Image 1 (tube, one colour):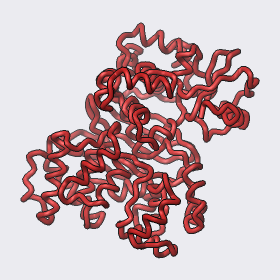
Image 2 (cartoon, helix red, strand yellow; image 1 turned 30 degrees about the vertical axis):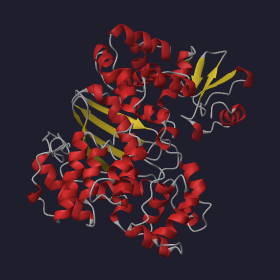
Image 3 (cartoon, rainbow, N blue to C red; image 1 turned 120 degrees about the vertical axis):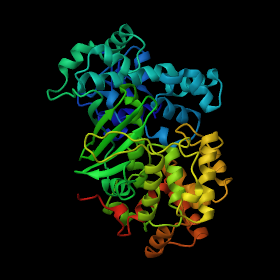
Length: 490
């Protein structure tokens, strides 16, 4: 995108918010960089330069605009859509891998050398993994400075900086303000004083239809791990340094996010997981524009545009839940999952009292006695096989996983059929083109709209929906009066 100068100029001159996060505009005369929708008068075209990432603009010597706050833009939709090395690396960097394991750890997870990883990121994004991680640390630091009353030393280490000096220098360089000045300029209002408690706003590209997104999460909520309360979806989070509880509420122009973390070093990773779960970096204009080209889908899109794909904060967790949900109702799947949680999940304290456990990890489920499971013998074998594959590393479903390889690993497991593979690809791997042609609800919806409804015929017709078939599934499912399609009212 950033190499198409004419398109970038049109986006900046029209202040088109759809392109926020796609590229960044640097102004030679002021030495600042902005998002395309910055409210100030656009500079002269000859004074603009375009960069593919905030890190690249920072490395070129530009500071973040104080008006439009480009560091708070939605992420580029490319990183969730694409499955190549650069996209996988960006998802891992957002999850905090570079801060925890360094660049060698990032490269190892990708299956490439450190040199090749750095070269490809630099070629496409204008910045290497260290610079990209540094830009993320600066954004995390700003959030903590502006929304909490934490001492600056605590902010520095929670954001991932190795020293207070580096923290101060980075904040000054990126924002042209000291940390203290950032806090003084922040909007007036109460700041979190409870350790680990944060109130944030998660931006997204308009439009966003919350009905199927929050409806699905609430209708399938596992007791003790998830709940819908007072207009918010709440759930527990298993994070690298500890655990957390998040409450997410839809608002007209943002998602209200209230986080409670046992270790603030998990902040960036927790935000990234929540954004992935709610599909907040999607480009609804591109998705809906393509799906409208099918006259059968166009009325559904026009009626409720901006549907997202409800995903997950933990891919391994969803794989287990997908097997539990094979050939049973939503209520039965919740019951099975709730039993696993009570028997094997780690207990936690929830100040609000509604949540009690973390979903058990594959390691915690390794000692599971299949005879204690109230399900058919073949499904017990499938479940224990998936758990064993996750625990041994034979099945890799993390944010940086190769989607094709993960599909092949899943399909090789006994009892894991195409429906389960595609559900996991859609919600755990985040593949925007995942498709479930054998799903009964999908076939019933297709028949009701006059679309082909046998699996083979539906696959052939779905070629016109690519690469957004996962979103087409959401629109088709929405024709059914099922709780997953409705925003809870209480």
